[in-house]
Length: 480
Image (tube, rainbow, N blue to C red; front, side, top):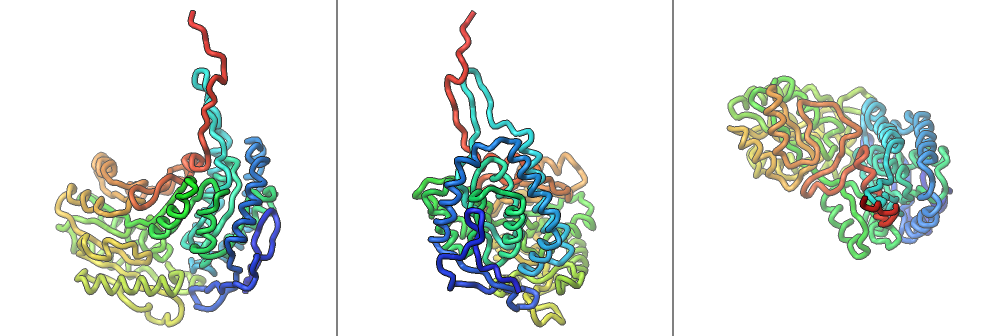
């Protein structure tokens, strides 16, 4: 049992203002309590923001060399804690042990290393004629992160914030807070100056709202649902602070007529099932030629049946989804797909056989879905794939873009030029061609209701910087 009842404020672990409010953190594989956290309040947020504000004048003027050394120290400490981090992620949100170790925990260090690489060569000043353009840290940043890739989302915000000279207050998801505590221990051991990084646990409507509305917070970076992102923006509006959002998705996966179906369909199914479908950029709408629908469904059925479900320590492909509420939402949407007439290819409602305890979901594939069905419109956030048919590539592009979201998209095909042309017409912030590998320097973020701004690599730095123009910095050159 983990008891994490203190917050990290001004370089020390401190008691909450009100220590009576606690929350049990549920292990989704067992449905039993894995530990407790304290639930913060606006007063706790205020203490943390004041600490960050007090630390800002000093930290914002540190040299690039100082911040490089700090990131290197954090990376060294993180490497020592990877097994602890992976174990915490498995316990709090159900990621299989291998996924937790090789992907979930590994992404934390990958973002730190990316920020370090960018920082070493980043130009914070640029002279244009007699004017100096200066990029300065924006100030105190409020960071609100989700439960599905917990340390990934923490790292991709904290690393660039530290690199650019900002101070910050983090509110991780109360559903998966253990990894955030370990992250904080890493930063403390690495010597992050007091007040630069602060942690307050709690719920969105209390701690999250207090962060996004606080007048001393200069920007808020939020990752989560579109619904919650709207509330963050609404709370931030009266103080006109910068709002960066990475929100929901319903990403199309366009498989072109000349694609290797066996490879593309299998990869598409695996892309949805990974992390129990709990990824905002999962390719949850697979678009395939109607003329090859039967072949596609046979391949998808085999891939779905090969996706094993079980205890995270068992070696199964996927573990449980994160909570009872999430399980019930997914079940209702699976039932809605059946009710609206989609073909159930594999999976369906209820728990997998032999798993009576834990929030386990059957890997589910629906075929012959049309884009007006609920399962094609709503973000399910579970191991559920909708396969839609098209007659022409033009129709595929239209269906792909017919969504309020625009976080990611996928295209597979043999004709490289056609693949690129289709990608150029998809309204999404990141387009993956032929199952390409992740790129830590590629910007990540969405169009439309999937958010605004970008994370990862050098694009992340811009979110945490203000631009100042200093006119007359250099003497004007006289004409000859």
